[in-house]
Length: 258
Ligand SMILES: O=C(O)CCC(=O)C(=O)O
Ligand SMILES: [Fe+2]
Image (cartoon, rainbow, N blue to C red; front, top):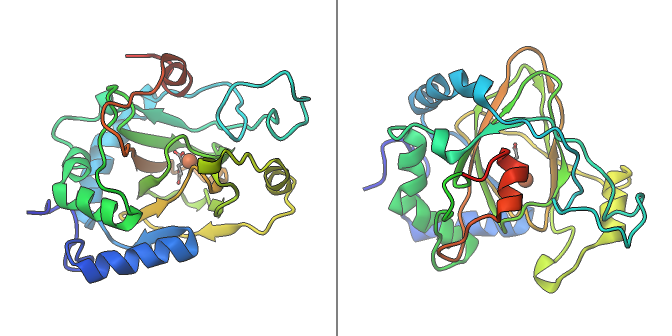
């Protein structure tokens, strides 16, 4: 049975025809938004339990490249591989999410996971083997942003929890590279960073589910405007069991390794 924290009347995630239509949309548009995927009372409960954790959030005070990898001295500082991007938003890790949170029920729901597999065209998805990476809540207070990047994981599943008054636009350019073929797409990356590429802005509201292929789509979130913090959950999965982030990646993203 699907968790009551998902609106399966509006989004019949167990129906093959619905799954197929979502898959088509993701493949055509590079992103999928399912409006009102979690009901308003569920979102209110998640915000009530998450908002007080904002002061515990980790804010990395380092810049990064679009690939989220260390600089490579074989390239110049201005090369697309080494160009430094600012991300100022904070996050809380999986081990800080309450055991009773609806976020855990949604993350682990078998029907939800089957739906994601069907839409993404993969057999199985698994949680991260480390205790920090699976469910993260992001906080972007006034002026904070998430700069241009590609994700480490091949796909991203997010849900907005609290919208700010203005700003915080999610912008993306689908299929900038084909990472499976080792494509780094330096020219296309430079064009996006220099503002020469037309970007798509995705609008979504609290409770909407968003899926995109973040390893190949370049994406960012512009600065939050106004005094209301943007809250968003990232559900992270792997298509192989037993995958953990490396200690250095954990240190970069969470400021700790356990
Ligand atoms: O905040 C968002 O909407 C996107 C988050 C994201 O891209 C990420 O966590 O890598
Ligand atoms: Fe991302």
